[in-house]
Image (cartoon, rainbow, N blue to C red):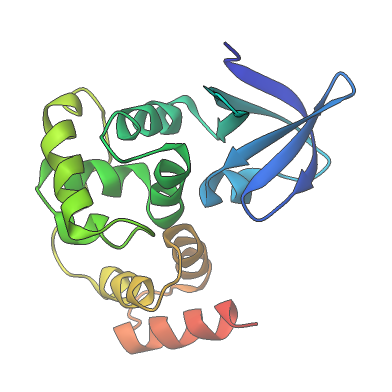
Length: 190
């Protein structure tokens, strides 16, 4: 019903933003990635999905249409509701989700909050044939110091978008895994 909302970001909460569009404040639940990309007091377009239930009407928002598309696929899986699907996006990016589904990698999917082994296997089973037309950036399987550091930080409970930002801003050629982790932890614990 509402494809997108364009307006000024007035507020950022833990799991939502409020966008002022024509003097109406729309509360939109978003993933950590979308929350991170939303800049306060600037006008932005947020793609939405409106969920109507007997006792609630909620808007779920996405930074781009591809994220919304994968979210809608995830919500077709039995047991995955809108908030759980957003939780999956908060723990990993689209490329990781899709490549995990295509490669039967339930272990990676279980790193998302609220996703156990059975749910991860159900996601793979139900979505494997539905992701063929989604173009993703294929990540090489070669273990690099950056990749090993990312996996270690993920295991410590940090979110993928946080890790990527910190590593991208601090990585220098030739750094070891330990150096990358040390520098990243120093910046993320401030």
